[in-house]
Amino acid sequence: MKEFYKKLCQKFDASNSETQARFQEFGLTAPRYIDLYAQQDLNEENFELFHGNALLVEWMINYEESPAIATIELRVCFEQLRSTANISANMDVALKSMDYNHLVDQLVQTITTESTGKLKLVWEGSNRLDSIVDIYIFRYECQYVKRAPEPEYPNTGKFEDLEINGQLVEKINSVTEATEFEWDL
Image (cartoon, rainbow, N blue to C red; front, side):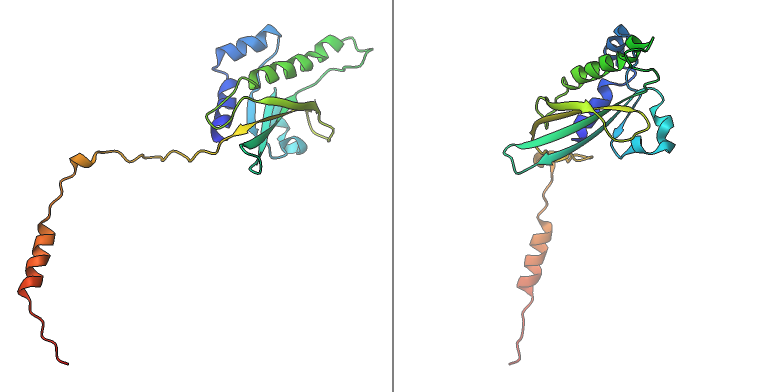
């Protein structure tokens, strides 16, 4: 899942010009803050984290299924400063949050890794909990194959490069042969 998370961050990184262009087509900005979900949206002290848009992600893996199934929940945080009411003069501007959510979903569904298969959208909906920003939730499922982590410093070398010197064994054998043991019974 580490690889999935890193790819998610790369997909929405400010240096990803393709992603940035897609958001600009709609007059929007890409998420600026991406993190693992830890209820940041419920704590008022975290309001500065959400200046602009954010993505919070969490996952669960069910190993009882074969192959294992990963459930990924993506919380899309969108700073909503306008009214979506039908009598609002800025309703169309306020509804850009729906364009934003749709675009995030399209981009996220393109992410695959060696461990995770193609994401399948299972459900989506508005967050009903009190939070400091507006949140829309996407829940995806995909097959998951647990991979062993790559060693930080992989072992390299060839056995042909080793010099095997048998002098130690020869010395032990010569000492053992030269020594006679006397046993007092």
